[in-house]
Length: 381
Image (cartoon, rainbow, N blue to C red):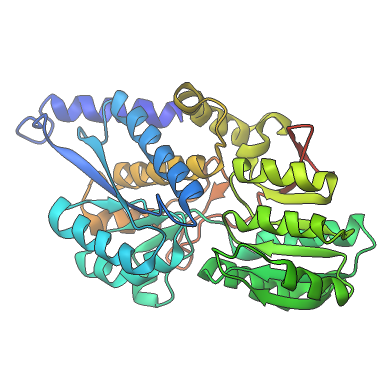
């Protein structure tokens, strides 16, 4: 990180000094657009992502900007709805004239708006999964590890550390949750696990007891819950109200969502954790060093707030800056082409290895299983 920021300062100084012609005007900016679910079911993670992008932009700007331009971040609330995402994308393309999108975790919204972005030839470095069509994927890059990693982390624990062999799966209707559900259905048997129920719930459901009771009756000793938001606490309360001796293993989420869940279920609650969420337990090395580079400015502004999704937003900005520097250009097609050339890049979540055939940069599972015991986040051994 220090090396990358130092190069930014040198580049900015050279350009300001007249390299290549006329001096850069002070008002020139590089605009990052964010379509984020600041309200709705994705609010917790997308607010953190957006704030992480802003912190990264502040750090880059404090060190001279990128190619002599200050980064300007434009955030629009898509209310966690695909239709609203299309509207805000269109606005940022036509009115704000953004240069790149570092958009949040509402996969359906990013997918729905992708054709607009492709026509405008604007790269996207996303918190979410990639669009479905090849032409849309060409302009989209994801900071999100493959969906199977979250499932594998939980199934491996059940196989190695418990006698539970019957499991239920609950998931919300989002594209990423459905991807995880499909992975669970496909690979559970490889871990000696029988799925005795696979049920979808709504993101605003206030009672999941019918689904949970059905899975318990089928012999489930654990539930894999896939999805964001307050339904995780709902599921925990239902399990306790029903008097069930059942484990709840949930997806990656903000720790503030998990803390009240841990108060309800105690040591029967497990969650997929990113490296930034268990920073203190990490061994010294490049990953911990990069997280530390981010945590300094993050904690200065936000204290002990969960760094996970914000760190991924930080990664999105730094990957974008790296691509700009690699090609010495802010033009959309050039940035897109150079994002494909980024390999071995240490981020806060893992190492990114993009290529023309791979726009989902993290290829090795960075996740661990976590618990919150006596208010402290722990890695489950």
